[in-house]
Figure 1 (cartoon, rainbow, N blue to C red):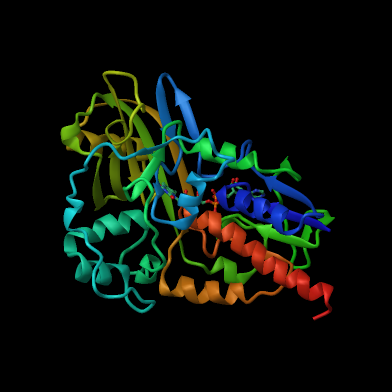
Figure 2 (cartoon, rainbow, N blue to C red):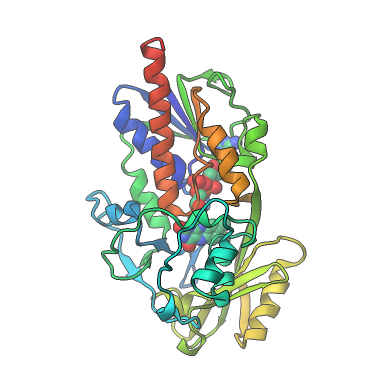
Length: 361
Ligand SMILES: Cc1cc2nc3c(=O)[nH]c(=O)nc-3n(C[C@H](O)[C@H](O)[C@H](O)COP(=O)(O)OP(=O)(O)OC[C@H]3O[C@@H](n4cnc5c(N)ncnc54)[C@H](O)[C@@H]3O)c2cc1C
């Protein structure tokens, strides 16, 4: 049996690992358009700075995260917890007595549950307009964090997690090539496969399907600056919802070992990619009293961020009913733990389809 994964981000890597487990005799090929695995996840070391390309923290109250901590294949991964306390006082952030639902918006839910002050915080985390995003995003099982905190980072950067996960590949052949077309019958460019996991953000998938193209999406960008030393008084970051800026985090306050002594590292986050991001980020930092020295990195992802609105869930449900040999991770993938589970979940759906083919159903 021949199986393929298209997209080598966290979702695609997780899908390839699950394919190896569930199809022990199949040949598996993972296609990645970039030069390395990881997608939005990556760590760059430059002049003594540790710079995260995208995510810098992992929700520690998800099963997928806690199982990573105890996975013997990841012994080199050193977890670390948030250092700075942040300007937002989380001590009052207790889980409310009302349940999230599909019909209730995130903004509505959060302002009733926690208070109006918390709305920009949640909007920042879920990367969308709080009135469009459904509060359903907050539902789901929470587990006890073994670290005693809600979010963790990795001492050597999140890129290390990707490297370690990829060492799990035993039979997966990784091919660095941009795929132009996946067909509903399982053809990937010029080769046919029995099953395909498409682990590419919905709008970027090389697969023509109106449903995929109608999933609501947004954009995101990060500009990372070397700064003069940032003191603990600044906290680990600030939230904003103006001029396309969703906030800034002070990585050198938030995590240990991110910058050389006497220097600071700050990241400004954007939810709109219009105009001169470098300049807008710089002005924003200055307005906060932080002194930028130079730009270290800029990354932007246009129309790649899923917006978990009511519409998203309705379309995603229809996509999930697809019983063909091509399955999609992007309908569930948001955040590292959920991407890990979305890869596995897509493989489970594919297994059902292939099982049906085998027994002629
Ligand atoms: C600014 C920002 C900050 C974030 N912070 C956090 C955080 O702190 N914690 C957290 O848990 N999550 C965070 N996230 C979310 C997290 O980064 C994503 O949910 C996750 O990385 C998505 O993984 P993925 O594998 O689904 O997609 P991607 O990482 O986008 O991977 C898709 C892969 O497919 C490849 N590809 C695309 N087209 C093709 C093609 N035609 N052929 C072959 N390959 C192709 C791409 O090159 C890419 O490698 C953040 C996201 C952003 C944008």
